[in-house]
Image 1 (cartoon, helix red, strand yellow):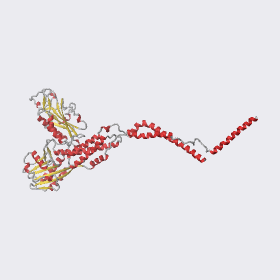
Image 2 (cartoon, rainbow, N blue to C red):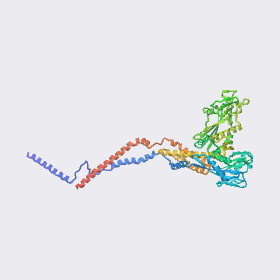
Image 3 (cartoon, one colour):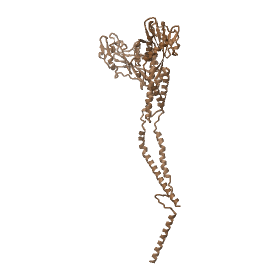
Image 4 (cartoon, rainbow, N blue to C red):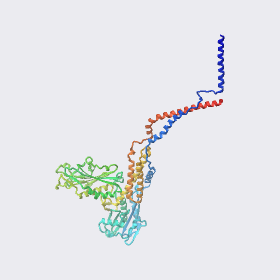
Length: 614
């Protein structure tokens, strides 16, 4: 027993010795808490890998954004706004130079000038879009010397005294007088001249020439004040307004397409080829009558001509037999139903597509077949006007569509002989007469009169027709009107395009659209410059180009693409692909950064305690 107790005592003494050593180590080292401290420095490997993945996503985002970016060519928004503001605030001014020549009158030029200007102010109408800047010079030719008004234009100063006398107007050959005045005043000048000549009789004659001048022959007892009133009316109502009446076709409805093109489609309609078939020599008419007119209208519109011959083209309206006239008659109330759109296949070529304006001119051949099928035959067929009279042209127009002329061949007469099975050619004389009617209808579509008389408040003026269909002063009216309308149309279209592009940031804007807008603005500026200088033909051509390019830019196919959408739509499309992964990567980076900060704080806490203990 004693031995066991000794052994137990020896073991307890060892335990006591070890217990005495432990407090001695704790006194040399600080207290270590593994929950709040760590002895080793935290590693950066996990943090580096996590943030490498995170930054790779951040660096890839610009490439992703660039890959889904919509291409937008820069547009000159300031220049577009400047053009719109300029046309809206300042009216487009067309300079008009007038020259009144009085031969055989003993009057003061300055007094006549003031009298004519006061009448012009009364007659001139204000256009909210475009206006005219009038200048007037008056010359009194006393045969031996000339009296000129103080404000004479450079053109009127070139007039030589005694160049025009009363004997030049004795003959009734207006064409010869017109050419005579053209050589005196100069046919190429942009000045509108009126010669008032006191003749040796009481008869009065007023004529407007084919160029930019007119003449008024009055009797010896006529007063100069009355002549001044007529001159003022001529200058405003004819040379400025084109002789248009109230209620005529408005300026905005000129038969010109948005691209500045007109397609004249001439159609020869054979109502019933079982009776007979007619053809025409269209090429000859095109060369002699249509080509000069198309060349004259070149600055206003780009005109192309097409022709075709159709068969089995009955009209949609009904006519009745007039025993007194021995003809079938259709009245004006039936005109809306005359054109048979179901049977008249007035097709045009592919070149006539797009925004070009197509004008149809139909030559309708009516057939008399009392000896064949009386219910289907109507010949001769005549048009009765609202006043009960028969139309001299036997045709009518449809605004913005074209015109129709009914031609009754000689076979309509019961005593005439014709062969139903043969192919007939329309006589060239009849064809020329019908195409003169077509040209008159074309003039009416432009707002001019088809008759050669202007009935004014102070008297009538005879209008000399031109071989080209339009006189020089009529072409000036069209050019000014066309320039005004096209410039405002261009500004409106470009302004709409500018607002549309700025409202849709992700709309596709191709380089072609940017070039079209740029060239449109350049053409518009050139048209404004030419218009202010009085170069009407160039201003009309430039304005037509500006309007056409603006329309092409606005209706470009790429603008109507489905590829443009809002930023919200773009986010909704791509977020299902990238948002889940991006959120996990971002959360992992946040957690790893937080863990690294906590572990580093533990290490710094142990270091601080170890330093304090030492």
